[in-house]
Amino acid sequence: MRSILVFVLVLLAAVAPAVAAKPANSHAVNMPILIAPMSKGGRLIGYAYLNPVLMAASDAAALQIRDRTPFLQDAFVRDVNAASIQRQDNPNALNIKDLQTRLLADSRRVVGEGNVTAVNFSQIQIAWIVPGVGVTNQPPVSPTH
Image (cartoon, rainbow, N blue to C red; front, side, top):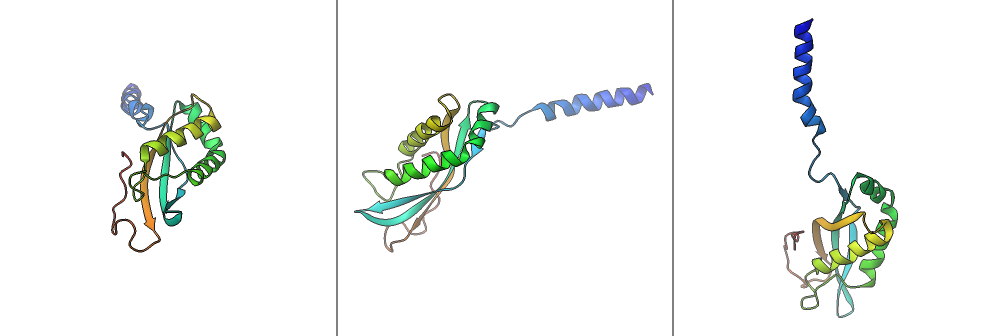
């Protein structure tokens, strides 16, 4: 009986750290895909497909973000349709830093100031609808730019 008790305690000691450990990005909240129009000279030239990831300040903040997802999505759609997401010097490229700043402001307005710490993108893809515009066979844009 004593050996069984020792075995169970050793097993629990080995499993407890693995169960208690949280992933490093446990406060990352994946948002639905955001589709943003891209234009040049007042004409639609393509769409950017964005996968926003909101970084929550805590577990409670992550729950608030998930609860407010429809309102966040509405704010994001309004934002990307109201102002350009493209760089001023190159309409074929996205202004990621500016877009992150804008979406962070939208997020903080919807969820609360201290709940969202950053906005990142897990993936960005551009689909050109006008032939000859942009780069053909362009790889997905790196989310770190």
